[in-house]
Length: 395
Image (cartoon, rainbow, N blue to C red; front, side):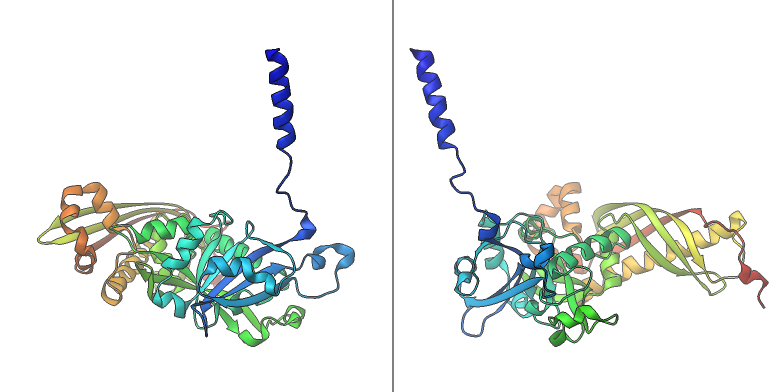
């Protein structure tokens, strides 16, 4: 009898585990991008970028835009998300959201309340890019078309990943990275900055995709510097790379100057960063040590690279360039913004807990007077497929 009861219970459970909450693909619209701005009548203006699925269906393609954007205003993002069907036909699905763009005007006032909604929501994954728009409206960023990727947010997703992989100027900041940094005692947040090169007004025109020289294109513009959840300034693309070097950047290309005054380029394919902290003479001392391996990929000098002494000269020049760039950017942040975005406070917390505990409440003031030392060791492995150049034979 007990066996019969168990089989009956299993049958009931299997019957109850059907797809009670399933939705067919033709019943939903996938949101790939969102833009958040200050509203005119309400606290927020939210724009969503929805995939126009008919344009990716082969026979249904008519040459129209690959996405549709819709904007609403309200005081809570949670309500706006569910209210978008005032204008849109299908249920919105946010699981494939790739980019969330926050307008710089709103970021100046603080983005904590919006991030708190994202953190609570079960509809969003933690793999979207959180970026700040500079000089243009956030809604213009996610509506700027591109011929290769007809969905603007998908284009940005690949653009950011490629930038990080090839040159290293993109900080891969996700939601949990940002929120955990806000609450840290020894670090302030950063986020990537984007802008539009060209005419933002023409960026949402389908004809923008039908010409070689685009009227508008979304471009990375460096880093946004935050104090807690408020935007306070920017670093340019070069400075963003310098920041990432302190975070253990792996791959990039550096241009330096040869002893005879010509340029040469090194592709670094491996690097390691080590940070040591101490507290002496009433100020923090921070030493950044880098070991970099790379290849010489270009040189404008006529001096051949066929002797070890020449390799050593170029290694020394590359080392000086790296050290100057990193220290210059850190000094700029100390003087201009006075907030520790590098996580030196977190490092001191790990290395000298008792000392950091006594100064953590005013760590930013300590950071501003910190002594910074950068020591780089560059190891050049190869110089391409030729040690001598035809430039040597030119007068």
